[in-house]
Length: 420
Image 1 (cartoon, helix red, strand yellow):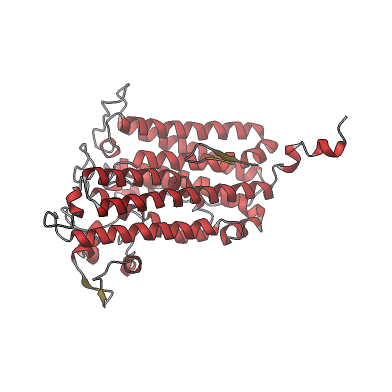
Image 2 (image 1 turned 45 degrees about the horizontal axis):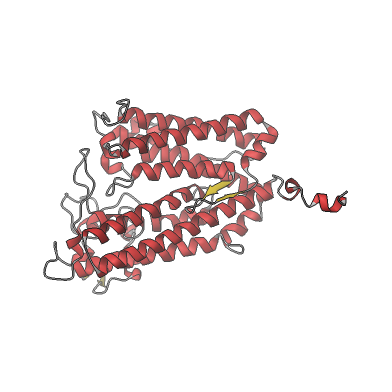
């Protein structure tokens, strides 16, 4: 017979029981892993960008675009950590701000935003300029220069850094409206020879390289913040009850106001492809899907990494199930339903109907097997996200936490205000 002490060491439940402290630790572990993977894929993007600049060709441009799209997958799963964590929220705008007045960065064909005086600056084509009344020498484009430009003059559309600035430089403007097609910047925009198209190819390449380098350093900063001694982790582990509230705030705010409202319902109401988040590349359905998966990750306490391995631990689901098994079952099913609805949008896009086409007034996705309209696909996902948020609110009460406030959206809360 084995000694009792030896048997106790074989019982994982004793070491990994779900309680606020262990659930908070899982949450921090998930964040660290997802930001680490975001950093790793951004480093791969940086290498692909370097190859594009060293030898511009259709192949190296496509490789950089593919690397950008792959980098979005782990990052999209981190957005749930933004809400409820002030340090992440303050940092997030540097890496994921949108929409942007792309004329700040480079040449554009479409008319700029008349309310933003910097919408026509075109830093790539303008080595010296004035910013906030101060003369700027932009002869050499560096990460520091881009940081100075970002949200200059307090205008949120002056997005100079992050994923979407890089996306614009890789794809160029999408001038197709709600018709088929994404941005189609030619590789010759990066040629360092007389064959350069649209001028300033050397500066365009320098901006792309600097912006990608800056993204890597920003992600390294956030990865460190969730490490064992990092401030984001230590803030949560110091107050496990507050950590639970932060987790549920993230689930509710991303799912309701941000994803269902600002990123999906608003664009559908306006039939406006400019409200599409990844508007240059037309990869919005994938970002939306992984936002939904990220929300589910937090509740289930698990995360599947790009290499297929899974990180898991005590979860919110465990805590809720211990107090109200019915609520836990319902919320798990609702999270699965929203992920399925978001997957259906991605499938329609993969079958040939881009997200901006789904936003068109007629929004018929003829390439889906059941001829479902784009409006129906988007509305189904919005409704699923709204439904799960009601259960997230129930989980707050079930766990005895102080009421939390979720981000809202006029598109959901005051639709009449959208058209005023």
